[in-house]
Image (tube, rainbow, N blue to C red):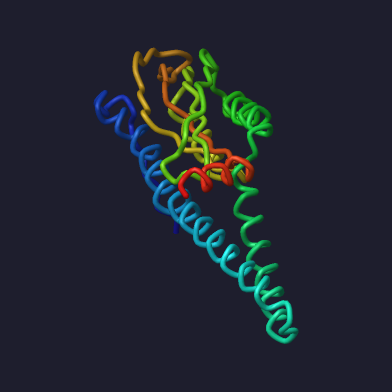
Length: 203
Protein backbone atom coordinates (compact mmCIF):
# COMPACT_ATOMS: atom_id res chain seq x y z
CA UNK A 1 0.00 0.00 0.00
CA UNK A 2 1.51 3.30 -1.09
CA UNK A 3 2.16 5.87 1.60
CA UNK A 4 0.65 9.23 0.73
CA UNK A 5 2.40 12.31 2.03
CA UNK A 6 0.52 15.59 1.72
CA UNK A 7 2.56 18.74 2.17
CA UNK A 8 0.78 22.08 2.27
CA UNK A 9 3.24 24.46 0.58
CA UNK A 10 1.43 27.41 2.20
CA UNK A 11 2.47 26.26 5.67
CA UNK A 12 6.16 25.99 4.78
CA UNK A 13 8.25 29.03 5.65
CA UNK A 14 10.06 31.01 2.98
CA UNK A 15 13.37 29.65 4.29
CA UNK A 16 12.00 26.11 4.12
CA UNK A 17 10.93 26.57 0.51
CA UNK A 18 14.34 27.92 -0.41
CA UNK A 19 16.05 24.98 1.31
CA UNK A 20 13.77 22.49 -0.46
CA UNK A 21 14.72 23.99 -3.82
CA UNK A 22 18.41 24.61 -3.14
CA UNK A 23 19.42 21.38 -1.39
CA UNK A 24 18.87 19.07 -4.42
CA UNK A 25 20.98 21.38 -6.57
CA UNK A 26 23.76 21.53 -3.98
CA UNK A 27 23.72 17.76 -3.60
CA UNK A 28 23.90 17.36 -7.39
CA UNK A 29 26.82 19.82 -7.56
CA UNK A 30 28.79 18.02 -4.85
CA UNK A 31 28.10 14.61 -6.38
CA UNK A 32 29.14 15.77 -9.86
CA UNK A 33 32.42 17.17 -8.55
CA UNK A 34 33.25 14.29 -6.18
CA UNK A 35 31.96 11.34 -8.22
CA UNK A 36 32.46 12.47 -11.82
CA UNK A 37 34.84 15.35 -12.52
CA UNK A 38 37.63 14.63 -10.00
CA UNK A 39 37.77 10.85 -10.67
CA UNK A 40 37.65 11.37 -14.45
CA UNK A 41 40.40 13.99 -14.41
CA UNK A 42 42.53 11.71 -12.22
CA UNK A 43 41.93 8.71 -14.48
CA UNK A 44 42.68 10.73 -17.63
CA UNK A 45 46.01 11.83 -16.16
CA UNK A 46 46.87 8.27 -15.14
CA UNK A 47 45.92 6.88 -18.55
CA UNK A 48 47.95 9.49 -20.40
CA UNK A 49 50.95 8.68 -18.20
CA UNK A 50 50.57 4.94 -18.80
CA UNK A 51 50.16 5.45 -22.55
CA UNK A 52 53.33 7.55 -22.68
CA UNK A 53 55.24 4.95 -20.66
CA UNK A 54 54.02 2.07 -22.82
CA UNK A 55 54.75 3.89 -26.07
CA UNK A 56 58.28 4.35 -24.79
CA UNK A 57 58.49 0.62 -24.04
CA UNK A 58 57.12 -0.20 -27.49
CA UNK A 59 59.86 1.87 -29.08
CA UNK A 60 62.47 -0.08 -27.08
CA UNK A 61 60.89 -3.44 -27.82
CA UNK A 62 60.78 -3.37 -31.62
CA UNK A 63 63.10 -6.41 -31.78
CA UNK A 64 61.10 -8.37 -29.21
CA UNK A 65 58.06 -9.45 -31.17
CA UNK A 66 56.42 -11.36 -28.33
CA UNK A 67 56.55 -8.41 -25.92
CA UNK A 68 55.73 -5.92 -28.68
CA UNK A 69 52.41 -7.60 -29.44
CA UNK A 70 51.35 -7.60 -25.80
CA UNK A 71 52.36 -3.98 -25.26
CA UNK A 72 50.63 -2.84 -28.45
CA UNK A 73 47.38 -4.56 -27.42
CA UNK A 74 47.45 -2.98 -23.94
CA UNK A 75 48.31 0.42 -25.41
CA UNK A 76 45.30 0.29 -27.76
CA UNK A 77 43.04 -0.76 -24.88
CA UNK A 78 44.14 2.22 -22.80
CA UNK A 79 43.70 4.59 -25.73
CA UNK A 80 40.11 3.42 -26.22
CA UNK A 81 39.41 3.99 -22.52
CA UNK A 82 40.93 7.47 -22.77
CA UNK A 83 38.83 8.29 -25.85
CA UNK A 84 35.66 7.20 -24.04
CA UNK A 85 36.45 9.53 -21.14
CA UNK A 86 37.26 12.47 -23.40
CA UNK A 87 33.95 12.07 -25.26
CA UNK A 88 32.29 13.22 -22.05
CA UNK A 89 34.35 16.41 -22.26
CA UNK A 90 33.37 18.21 -25.50
CA UNK A 91 36.01 19.77 -27.69
CA UNK A 92 35.99 23.56 -27.67
CA UNK A 93 34.23 23.71 -31.05
CA UNK A 94 31.42 21.53 -29.65
CA UNK A 95 30.77 23.64 -26.56
CA UNK A 96 28.41 26.14 -28.23
CA UNK A 97 26.04 23.43 -29.46
CA UNK A 98 26.17 21.71 -26.07
CA UNK A 99 25.35 24.94 -24.22
CA UNK A 100 22.40 25.43 -26.58
CA UNK A 101 21.28 21.94 -25.59
CA UNK A 102 21.29 23.02 -21.93
CA UNK A 103 19.44 26.24 -22.80
CA UNK A 104 16.79 24.26 -24.70
CA UNK A 105 16.47 21.98 -21.68
CA UNK A 106 15.58 25.03 -19.55
CA UNK A 107 12.71 25.84 -21.90
CA UNK A 108 11.49 22.23 -22.09
CA UNK A 109 11.45 22.15 -18.29
CA UNK A 110 8.98 25.05 -18.25
CA UNK A 111 11.50 27.70 -17.20
CA UNK A 112 11.79 31.14 -18.77
CA UNK A 113 15.35 32.14 -19.70
CA UNK A 114 15.99 35.75 -18.68
CA UNK A 115 19.79 35.79 -18.92
CA UNK A 116 22.22 33.40 -20.62
CA UNK A 117 25.73 34.88 -20.46
CA UNK A 118 28.75 32.68 -21.29
CA UNK A 119 31.92 33.82 -19.57
CA UNK A 120 35.46 33.35 -20.84
CA UNK A 121 37.04 29.92 -20.63
CA UNK A 122 39.65 29.35 -17.96
CA UNK A 123 42.18 26.67 -17.13
CA UNK A 124 41.05 23.95 -14.74
CA UNK A 125 43.57 23.11 -12.02
CA UNK A 126 43.97 19.65 -13.56
CA UNK A 127 45.64 21.26 -16.58
CA UNK A 128 43.90 18.91 -19.03
CA UNK A 129 40.50 20.62 -19.36
CA UNK A 130 39.09 24.12 -19.67
CA UNK A 131 36.23 25.38 -17.52
CA UNK A 132 33.54 27.22 -19.50
CA UNK A 133 31.09 28.96 -17.12
CA UNK A 134 27.73 30.45 -18.09
CA UNK A 135 25.86 32.90 -15.87
CA UNK A 136 22.16 31.96 -15.98
CA UNK A 137 19.01 33.69 -14.78
CA UNK A 138 15.64 31.94 -15.06
CA UNK A 139 12.05 32.39 -13.96
CA UNK A 140 9.84 29.48 -12.93
CA UNK A 141 8.40 27.36 -10.14
CA UNK A 142 9.98 24.76 -7.85
CA UNK A 143 8.67 21.81 -9.84
CA UNK A 144 10.09 23.06 -13.16
CA UNK A 145 13.44 23.79 -11.53
CA UNK A 146 13.60 20.30 -10.02
CA UNK A 147 12.73 18.78 -13.39
CA UNK A 148 15.53 20.79 -15.03
CA UNK A 149 18.13 19.71 -12.45
CA UNK A 150 17.04 16.08 -12.83
CA UNK A 151 17.48 16.20 -16.60
CA UNK A 152 20.87 17.93 -16.37
CA UNK A 153 22.21 14.86 -14.55
CA UNK A 154 21.14 12.69 -17.51
CA UNK A 155 23.12 14.64 -20.11
CA UNK A 156 26.01 12.78 -21.73
CA UNK A 157 28.33 15.69 -20.98
CA UNK A 158 29.46 17.06 -17.65
CA UNK A 159 27.68 20.18 -16.33
CA UNK A 160 28.34 21.56 -12.86
CA UNK A 161 25.58 23.77 -11.37
CA UNK A 162 26.77 26.07 -8.58
CA UNK A 163 26.03 29.38 -6.83
CA UNK A 164 22.26 28.67 -6.89
CA UNK A 165 20.02 31.48 -5.66
CA UNK A 166 16.21 31.57 -5.45
CA UNK A 167 14.63 34.97 -4.80
CA UNK A 168 11.50 37.11 -5.29
CA UNK A 169 8.78 34.42 -5.08
CA UNK A 170 5.55 35.70 -6.64
CA UNK A 171 2.20 33.88 -6.74
CA UNK A 172 0.97 33.10 -10.24
CA UNK A 173 -1.81 30.64 -11.12
CA UNK A 174 -1.48 28.91 -7.78
CA UNK A 175 2.30 28.55 -8.00
CA UNK A 176 5.23 30.45 -6.51
CA UNK A 177 7.23 31.83 -9.43
CA UNK A 178 10.87 32.40 -8.48
CA UNK A 179 13.78 34.34 -9.84
CA UNK A 180 16.49 31.67 -10.24
CA UNK A 181 20.17 32.40 -10.78
CA UNK A 182 23.12 30.01 -10.94
CA UNK A 183 26.44 29.35 -12.62
CA UNK A 184 26.46 26.46 -15.09
CA UNK A 185 29.96 25.23 -15.86
CA UNK A 186 30.85 22.74 -18.56
CA UNK A 187 34.29 21.50 -19.48
CA UNK A 188 36.17 21.07 -22.75
CA UNK A 189 39.24 18.97 -23.39
CA UNK A 190 42.47 20.89 -23.94
CA UNK A 191 43.66 20.14 -27.51
CA UNK A 192 46.55 17.68 -27.65
CA UNK A 193 48.88 20.20 -29.28
CA UNK A 194 48.34 22.60 -26.37
CA UNK A 195 49.03 19.82 -23.87
CA UNK A 196 52.28 19.06 -25.69
CA UNK A 197 53.29 22.72 -25.46
CA UNK A 198 52.56 22.74 -21.73
CA UNK A 199 54.58 19.56 -21.22
CA UNK A 200 57.46 21.05 -23.20
CA UNK A 201 57.38 24.25 -21.14
CA UNK A 202 57.72 22.24 -17.91
CA UNK A 203 60.88 20.45 -19.09
